[in-house]
Image (cartoon, rainbow over all chains, first blue to last red):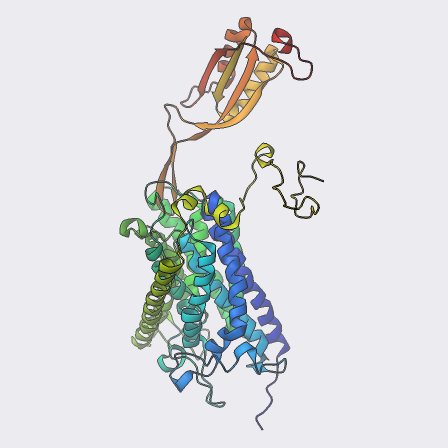
Length: 451
Length: 112
């Protein structure tokens, strides 16, 4: 009889809280993205994130968890067995992963799947059919995310004979909280989507000014807050590793924000609020894979490089001519690459004794090579498969909104709503025929509507 | 009667309102407007992308006055809205055929 593993109340409480924190990142992202688009498409932008919350959560418990954390099919580390935990079969309240109930781990990882899908939506702002996005989200989560999560997050266990993913085990690259599986993955997918859907009407000519920068800053704040769950929670325990991850999540992010602002001040003359919000996210992205492998010197270095490089990278789309509307590529792909690769340089055992060493700390170039292989593999896999999925959707049911819908605003076309009411005069109107003259619960609680 | 319309800098609205009240004007209509004159707009930079914003926020003030008061009201507005810097705005007047007070139905001068 195998020993019955014990549940740690402290670890369980911490990871439960972290799970809720990571869920909060997705509405945070909705505000971050929503503020950046124009007034006529803010609801659609936010709904792409909320849509992912609904859809991916269901897919995750149906077969996503099993594809990511089931025993590797054929033991080759490419894909977990979708039948093993189909519908979470066989898991009960007594099941334990490490020192926490398996259900907690299932939910913690569920939130990662949700936000990774939601991240992609920033590349296709202002021009997307909601139904097609939802179909894309389901296909992408299934074909791209669940396998990549297996590669990166599923660790083998010799004792129980469990075989996990190839990046985590065979290659041995370091990705603590998802620089490859989440950020490079979403960034590469965003690039593919932006290329398949094409540029918005007026891209590079008409100004697409952010319609609500306080929303963007609110979103960045919620993301930073939630990211503590993402990074420090990835220790899956309330311990020193979580503390190191938390520390680096503050330090790197602070450095990245300052670096982004400095680039702007020198290049454009002003340190902007959008730059501060963007720098925060760039730093959070970059420290994600590295937060348990570096000390504060490494965290600051990663933050400075990520903040400055992402600030420069967001301009590439105008030069190269792809409309990655909200810079999923410039922030998540570039930031994810910075963090994943710089582990190979600045990884140190200063804080966590068993950590691998990077080039600058006497570990040679071996780790850097592994990091590059992991980053490149996820980038290529995600880009190619995303392009195929997106192309298939565009050619069958259509992915992009009609020109008319795009010009008049995708909020109205997709959702039958408009985000803001600016004056009472314009708000007026009357009930349409048959829309509840006897039942008034749906009537806007506003004078002018029938009582 | 004349309709005097002024497009001014938003932060001068209170000065203009007070000056018109001091002159003896009983009512006016204010609306937010955007536009540009010789000063054109300004530039804004978002993630390094520089945009020229042509339209500048302005306030439009409309006052109905007797013919005799029209020129003086224009002067009052100019004096109270002036900063001397570019972008101070414009004032113009047009003739008005008829005015009625909705509450009483009074017409012409009595309706002012």
